[in-house]
Image 1 (cartoon, rainbow, N blue to C red):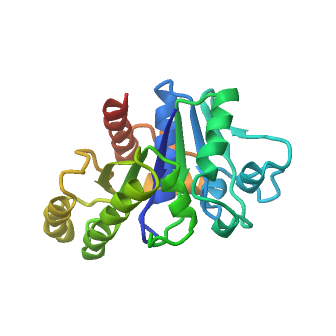
Image 2 (cartoon, rainbow, N blue to C red):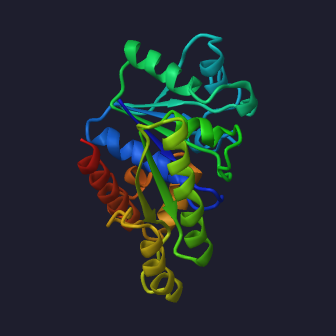
Image 3 (cartoon, rainbow, N blue to C red):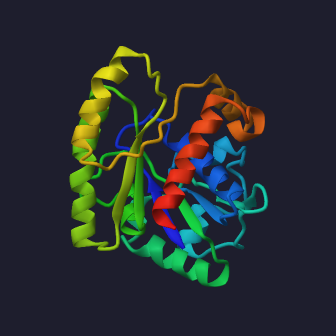
Length: 248
């Protein structure tokens, strides 16, 4: 079982969409995947049209309450739905990892993807902190703009801190450019700066802007389902293949 946190320190970068599409792409490659909605906003659950009244969620999982239940989407893809009631203050840094290790002993997965909240990591007990203390790997989507370069500089030392103080098995797998217009002047300006700041932690794959992503989101589906020959479908598959090559 490899546990991957998808995290950014700002919202609106496509973190949840990335989680959904990587999960689907991995499952299509034959990997058994668990997607965890670890954000109190429940955006991943909303993306899969899972109602907030669903009888089992991440808070039940963490609290060891209720009857264990996942939502299944396809042969190899499962979702642990989110909860607006989840609060980092109720848990220790290692609680999620302990629960996942127990789950894996009963119901093993190849990959667990944690969709984290978009908030700064600063050493305080937040859901993102718990997720990274429980993960093996970190992936971060960024947009090719000035503030994303700043985000790289802020995220890298936090990963080093968590690795040193709490989770020696944690490693940054990489950053990738998301919602890219390769002809845009901003991309041409900031992509080399971002790659320089990223210290070699960049995937060669990137995800281009594609209206089919928003169409799929509205329908509660993936671009693989509604537009399998689209740019985004090709890009997410390439990214997933690159990730699998790195970790298996």
